[in-house]
Structure formats: structure tokens, C-alpha cells
View (cartoon, helix red, strand yellow):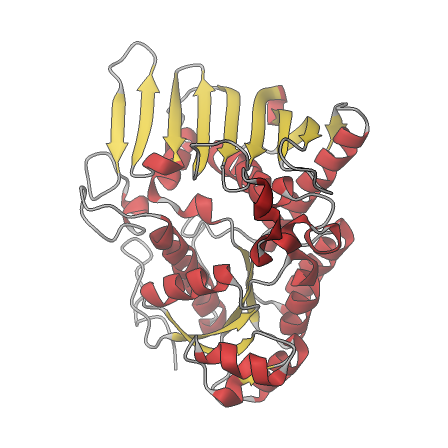
Length: 394
């Protein structure tokens, strides 16, 4: 059965599929619950299987919280990949929401079973593993998305279109910051969901950079259309002693020697979702703030300031309206952005299954290649910091 409706129109809204897709979960932490909620909300997915613990009984107990049947609760990624590949109604795709050090092994198991993957970022802790996953995705032909969810807010897509259409003229500066405050108290490091984020054997060589810095780096490139080419970075521990950084600052250069700044911290009291993007050009500028995600500030030099708000019409392009659910004035937020990510992932999965070519620009789904770019960014910041903040090439 074809999953796209007959005579699929790529110019209108995303279609209602002929059935919901079956989604599996590899890794059952807090972010898995968020993503499962958003996937269901998109109306394109139902959660049917999971590998949520290496202990079989615990795996079944945790699966119950996701309404997964006991016989679809697995104790390993390999077991789940093998079982679902054989199942007559096996998963169409899997979300990977494990700690960082397990991403490669989990993704490899499902790609080898021919199952499409949406993996949390950072993609891997090592560049060699990221390159291996790129090769496996190509060999298997599977869809491989990476959860740079910040790129799925409608106003970010609007910003990207404004830049692509020349609304800013020649880009001359790119600034992005991600400031949070949840790690300010010294005792927070003892929380179970935090411990692995500060353990280099699990989180990799960085903590703040890999977790939220990669979002900032991806967003700068996603909206500007310019590749991050060089950087110089400094890591800092601004709070209680930690084996990895909780703060970092970087100077950046993008294609064409376009300069910029990039910074992230988890110790900025008063900032919760403090992701802010500013791009300035020869004719104008754009500014977007995650905590005011419904609005995009767009300024043309010498003209009246413009505020574009999420909703239908009034400056919002038709391609952005595909990602809009409620009318202007009825707010949407991060869950809806996750829903947009899972909607575009669903469209990519269905296109593969139906053997349908997707028009260029129809989807903005971050891919395994973007995930590898994030790993490359992380490794560059580590090299620069270890060299005393010298410029390094990505």
C-alpha cells in the first residue's frame, strides 16, 4: 500500500498519510518522553516498540509507560533491530535518545536492519564514528535524521527564506548564543539525569559544547546558508568543579570570511531557553529569540522595523505555513517544533518507502551529514581550546 495519498501535491500542506507510521524508541530517558509526545501529536506516528533498559524486566516496566506491549520491549538495540525487522508490522523507524556514547552502536544496529533512524545530537563522540554512520546510511539507503529541533520553529524557517531570497543583502556578521541557568546550583551535578552529561566516558570530550553549542552552530549555518569554516574557542568551568566545561565562548568565520560569535553556558541565572540568533547584512538584519519564538524581527536599513509573527499569512510564506498548526495569537512552542521535526521525518520515510522523489527544498530535516558537521564542530572547539584559543580550521 502506498503511504502518500494519490496524486500527492508538494505545493500544499504536508499530506495526511494513508496510515500512521510505527515508531520505536532506543533509550528511554526524559527526552524520549518529550519526543514520543511530539511524534504522536504530529498524527503521523504511533509508538509500538522500545529498547529502554538492558534488564529485560526493567525494559518491560519502562515500556509500559510508553504503552508498548511487553513482547515489543527489548533488552538491547541489536535484539530490537533484529526482532522488528522480522516482525510482520515492524517499526518503520526508530528514535535514538540514549546518552551520546551509545548513538553509534544503536544507529548502526538499526541501519544494518534497514530501519530508518532519527538520532539525538551530538551524532557521535568521535568523527570516525560519524563518518561510519554516513557510509552506513548511504549503503542501506535509509533515511537518517538528526534532532536539531531548533531549526524546526516556523520563524526560523521564515528567517532562512528571507536570507535565501536576499532580504539582508550580503551577509557580514553572524552571532548566536545559547544561555541557560539550570546548572547554576552546585548540587545539580548529583541529579541522575545530569551525571552522565558530566562524565567524559559518556558525554565525550565536551558537555556544554556538545549538548547546546551544537544547536547554536547548526542554527547559524542553517539560517545563513553559510558553512562554519574556522573558529577559536575557550572552555570554562564557571561553577562548581567539573571534569568538562559548563561554558564556552568562540569567535567564528563562515564561508567568505564572514565573522561572528558563538557562545553557550548553563550558568546564566535568569536565562532558561536563551537561544538567540542575529544575522546582519549589507541591507538588513534578522533577530530571533527562543523565549519569544513566535516572532521574528526583520529590519531593512532605512525602513520601518518589521515584526513577523507565526501564523497564516501576513508575511509568512506558504512553505512555512506547512509547519503552523494554530492561528496567530494562539501560541505554539517547543513541543510543536519537535512535532515539525517528526512530521518532516515522516515525509522523508514515506517518500523512501513509496519510491517517490522529494522536490528540492520541500523538507528542512537535518540529516546525518549535518550531524557529522556537529561532531566536526565539537572536535574543532576542543583542538582550539587545548591550543590556548588559537584559530583552527574545521
